[in-house]
Image (cartoon, rainbow, N blue to C red; front, side, top):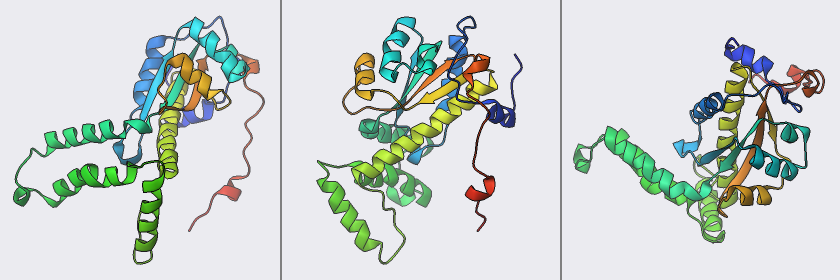
Length: 243
């Protein structure tokens, strides 16, 4: 099966609802596509995501009813569950700091470049300011602070817990798209599913309370009837604006 270019993969990718049970897919290729998923751009390089690669037929059969028995889930060869881990922000900020220390070995502040100071303060001070919260109380205080400061200058305003939740899910969705296009480039098919009982899926996977399901992606090789009709998009002119 020949590899596809980026443009070819984008054109080939469709949300496939019925997969061919007689055409298995290679676990190693799906894993490689997940490895390409984590190269996606993400907010502050926090990488607040995890990927659960479901290869067990038994586990697929447990999760399919939790996706309301959609054909895309019932006929899937494998599943990939994209999980948001906003609760891991402290660990991921620390990991970024450790990485920065390999680029900028610790030295007296007087010897640090402005770039080094900014990068380290970003993860030492700004990230904790944005991500720390307690029952939403700190979020209200931060929101009022930026509301006042924003009168005088441009300022980052997404500082409440619900705002950061949206940011984390956007980043996970970027990784999911990387994954699906990587699969399309391999000639494999996918279908992103939002329709699921996320609480029960979390229980099957043994996820902690702080984890959130971003989407479940079914994987396989399409049957002709697996693509429900031609692709429909509203006219490009309705969504494109040149400023």
